[in-house]
Image (cartoon, rainbow over all chains, first blue to last red; front, side, top):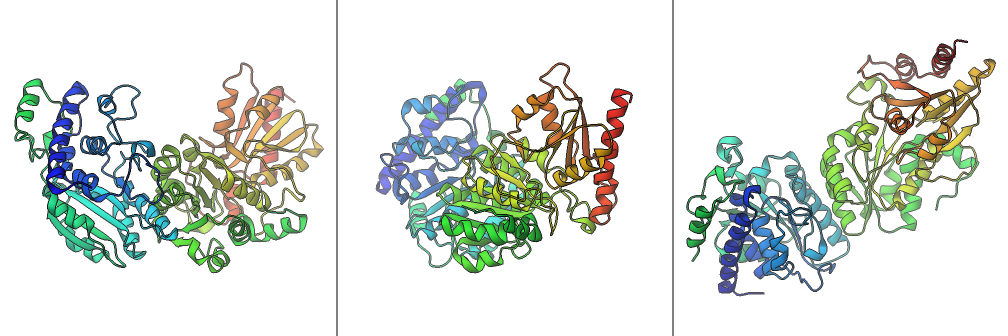
Length: 270
Length: 327
């Protein structure tokens, strides 16, 4: 486990690498907005929270990470790289023909990937099944799921939250990357999700609301243990975080970086 | 391992396909395999799961009326080494949770046994929302899925046991109601993908599936007065379809597909996909539901509306045969 300074450094390396990957995949474009909003969440998880080990990636006692917002691969792959699951060469294969590292991560335990994302809302349902399994086998594993706030429009998200509350899954932690934007615009304008905290509480969750770019708050929240009830961490983030011309702009949900934009974006990382 | 006897065949028949699977076979198989778990979407009692629930309360999950979540949770359990079976009405499991079946079972290859009950028209007065006439077409088009459609309650138990041991995700379609007609009175060799010839014949081959197999048998007895020699094949596996059987029948004069399902995309679709590989293949008469949400009535009425009663089947086959060969 890394200390807070190391985790912040890890987040910095991840954001730089994510921009490099986005630039290298050229005209294919990539999901920059929702990737950059989740950098600190992933850095905190893989730097200081998750009990996972690239030397033993299928250890049944490991924590599970279900990435339901499957398009946030720029943050996910770079975290797996920092955690030793993926190599620099693996990242170079991002969005190349035949590569396993495409725009939505695909389950492969040797790469540390527990779940195939791409169809929004599915991850939480799967995670409830995994959490029930770990309870049945008396494993101490914790099951973390990352969803987007736009993703919460999906009905199956609420079916899953209902079930997690019903089964009192205190090994189940949902993190909502609450960047306030979805494809068509601000979530408050497309489909209002507020008050999210009250919704989650009423589904039987212990809810924490934090700054999703503050690694210290993330670590404290994600390490909290509950008894007899699942936990939700609402991480308030900025879509496109760390690049001035991307921040809070829906146009950068999935986009192409020109050379000049790439240079500017990298120059802003310090 | 289920020990199939003729006495059991009668017991299974009384309970129907669903009752035989969940009331008798599941508790027995769960005793042998501690990894088996069962999930229901608020239809546990109706599915005959009460005995299983009381025997294995820790291995039963009621997910509520949330079919999509039921499939997702089952996939999560499967990823951790459990062997889950999920069940509700065929129309809801195959259509409401279609994308979950595609995502978790087809794409992620999670081994879940999906059992859709009350398929076809047996839900009678509940109306078209409750009939499943598209499920085989939808399930069959998902890569990696195995699709089974047993002929009677005993073979439904065999299908269920095989599905739990199968390395691929399986959809089992259950047809008919209580007192399901018996096709197999004696123990038999059930193999996924290998159809069973029930009656030998040379002129016409009927590929039937689900409880329509028993209607095919009755139709053949009605055709005995004619000079047409009819073979009946129980196509209990819709995917992978038994290509070898169809290829062996290519020299017959008329093929018939018989199913309680839309004539688009089900058994008839699967057979015609094989036939389209061959020049001069026989004509295929597709008997089933003709792409319509029809009127509502009792099961027999609905079957008759779709010309799926044995005498109607015999008549349609005879007419087609005579029309083709100018008898």
